Amino acid sequence: MQHLTTSFRALQLGGLMVYPLIALGVLAVAVLLDKTFVLIRFCKLPHQIVQIAETYNFAWTRLEDCMASLPRGNYYRRFFQVILDNRTNPAWWVESRAGDEAQLIEIALNRWLWMLETIVTAAPLIGLVGTIIGMMESFRLIGTGGLVNPTSITGGVAQALIATTLGIVVALIALFSFNFFSHLHSNTMDKMERLGTRLIDRLRVDHEERGGA
Picture 1 (cartoon, rainbow, N blue to C red):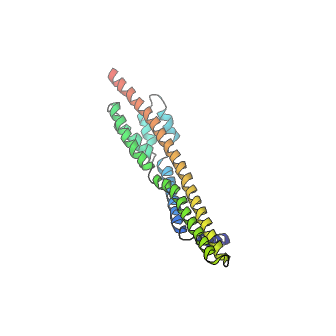
Picture 2: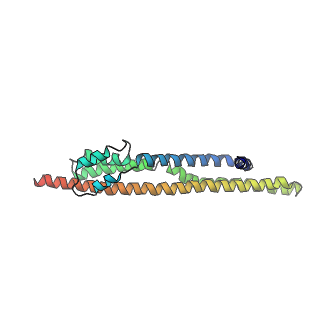
Picture 3: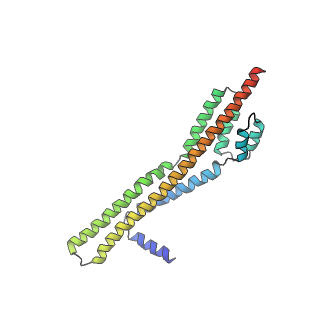
């Protein structure tokens, strides 16, 4: 409790720039929680589905049964369902529809990532503004009163350091979150593309068998 009180008092010394930095920090945490929920809820891919897709001449019914266990909003289910619904059509048609669905999924995955990227740049700059304001206040006091009131001068220095530190901390949180989720999203799309290729190959086998029959 004492640490929280001390931290709160320190933030109060940071000046006006502390408030936008706190707002950016709250936004970064909110985006982090949102992306975590999305990954847990909508990016789950059972290993059994991967095994089925990697098996030559697999049965479509097995894939449908496994997909039924996934939530309706699951991104893999959405993507695979487009292929399943159009599997009687030519392969080029299915590839086009699957590509369109993959683009929509990628847009959903990248939602709010721009916010993290903006915070990475904005937070240190706002902290720098707080630093400049704090140092200007210290220089003003030195210029007008010399060292008559050293407490006020150190208060300006403290304001500068707190604003700088807070800006860097917020930027680091946003940076690590952005890189982490960008990497996971890229892996999700790569896996979706690879498995989608396997399903399209399976469609081509079906079409060849029907054509040769």
